[in-house]
Image (cartoon, rainbow, N blue to C red):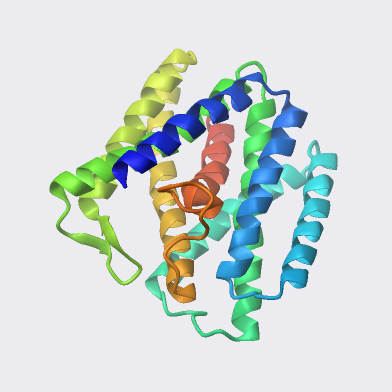
Amino acid sequence: MLLQRTLTALVLAPLAILIILLSSNAVFALIVAIAFLGALWEWTQLSGLRNQILRAGLLLLAVVVFGAMWWYRATPLTPLLLALGVAWWLLACLWLRHFAFAAAPTRENLALKLLAGALVIFPAWVAITRLHANLPHGHWWTLLALVIVWVSDIGAYFSGRAFGKRKLAPQISPGKTWAGVYGAMAAGVLVAVIGGWLLDVRNSQLLGLALLAFVTVAVSIVGDLIESLMKRHSQVKDSGTLFPGHGGLMDRLDSVFAALPVFVAGLLLLGL
């Protein structure tokens, strides 16, 4: 499994980096929207929606929402959606504490989970497109945001395998440990400091960036756990089978969805 995951990552990572660094903001926003629509399709199934026509209708509605967010990207709608995204992930922590909430396959729980999917997907898209558009280094800041999440995931994997004994959330994701959390934090903060230094961030702002990376990694773990909770409720191992060894789009993007609004909002507060 590790070999399969590594080979898949070696193919996907360079492609993602090229898209981030070489695409115009409009092209980048379109590509990300397509990827996020794929993840939303998987989320609708995890939510318990089985009707293919209704799922397709929700995707068409999401396309309209993406278009509206792009059209109004230079308005107060953007910071409002960023704030909504941050607030959602704080609320998600409560859901993890009460992990049986909305587990029953009722219409009310389906509606709640679909609403949660919107709060997962749309603020993250606003965040990453806003970050990518920032001049003069928006492309590089976007890459740094994703690398922080990627590297923290790697740090969590290896530190968890080497030292993991105490479980983080055994009822939700039995494989995750507190040692993995510490490894993720260390790796993410280190990458943020190096990346910030290369982007000419110094002194108190660099310290602020390190703290922001710490919070971002913590929230990315919440994102991972929320998707694990959805899979636990749906009684499936992966959200899809698109990527060998990695599962579906939601399996690959769960941490990113959580990290992006927090990271971008933090950058705005730091004046970066």
